[in-house]
Image 1 (cartoon, rainbow, N blue to C red):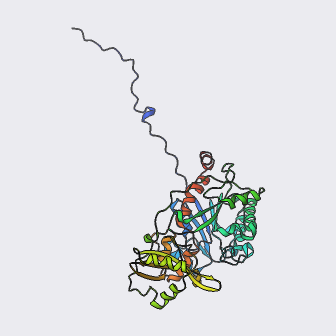
Image 2 (image 1 turned 120 degrees about the vertical axis):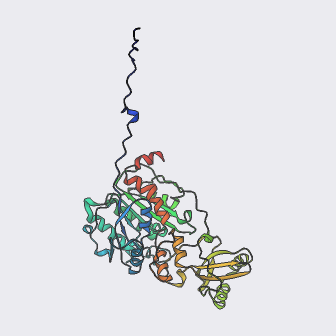
Image 3 (image 1 turned 135 degrees about the horizontal axis):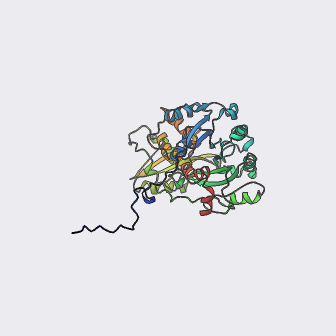
Length: 398
C-alpha cells in the first residue's frame, strides 16, 4: 500500500524571532540632573530636589549653624561654607540648574525694605555675577525663591531689575506664587521665579491661583521683559492641621509657660482674641499658634483663627517666634514651638537630623528655609520637563 505524503503547507514557517517577539528597545538611561544650591541653609532645597531625582553637586552658605545641620543630613563634601562674594564661576562644577533662596531681610514687610540695595537681599547680584562668569557653562535653568513682598519692593522695581538681569543672562522668566498651606498646615506664601533657556511655549500671564492679579499687573507694566507663564495646576490641598504636627508634651513639662507668664499672655489679648480663646478652652483639646504684635505701642498676643500655623520665621527675637496654644477641657497652656514642629511644618520627615542644635538654633535654620513639598512639586511639574526637553509638549498639553 503506497504511503501518502502530506501536501506541502503554503503557510509561512514560524520565525522564532518575529517582530512581535522582539522585546522593545529600552530608552537609554539619562544621566541624573545636577544642581548648584546657593544660599543653601540647612539643605531643604536639596531635600526637595532629591525627591525629584536631581542631584546637588555644589552648595554654599555663610552660616556655620546652618552648615552644621546640613552636614548632619547630607555631609559637607560639596558644601562651601563662606561668603558668596568670594565664589567665582570657575568654582562651580557643570550643573543643569542653579537655585537661590537669597536673603529676604531687605524685601520682607517685616524687614527694613531696603530692597536689592540692602546688604542681605542684595546678594542676588552676587548670584547673577557667578552665573555671568560661568559663560557657556551657565545652567539651563534657575530657580529663585523669596517672600511675596519681593514683588512690591520699591514699587516693583526690584523684581523688574532681577528679571531684567536674568533676561540679560539668557533666561526667559516665569513668576508665580505658591502658599505652603496647599502642602502642609502652614500659611507661607512665597514668590518663585523660574528662568529657562529652553522655550516653554508662548503663554501670556493670566489671573489664577498661582499668578494673582498683582503678578499679572507686573507683567502688563513691563512689556519689554522676557516673561512667560508655564501652565501649572496645584494638587489637591493638604487637609492636615496642627494636630498632625504638634509634639504631645505632657502637662507637667517645664516647656509650658508657668502660671504668671500664661496669665500675662491671656491679659494681653484683645476682647476678640479673648473670646476666641474662651471658645477653644471649653471645647475638645485643640491647638492654635500665636504671634506677639505691637498695637498702638503695646505688645499684645494674637491667636490664629484657623488650625494651621502662621508663617515660620527665623527665631531672632520674641516677636518672630511663634507660640503654641493648647486649649480644651477647661485648660489653657502656652509654650514656644519646638524645632521638630518647625521641621514638620516645612514638610521635613522626622528622621531629619537636627544636628544636636538647641531649639532656637534649629528654629533659626528652619524659619527662613523653603517648604520641601512645594519645591519638590515645582521640580517635578516644571523644572524636570524643562530640563528634559519636554516643556513645549507640556505647555501645548496644558
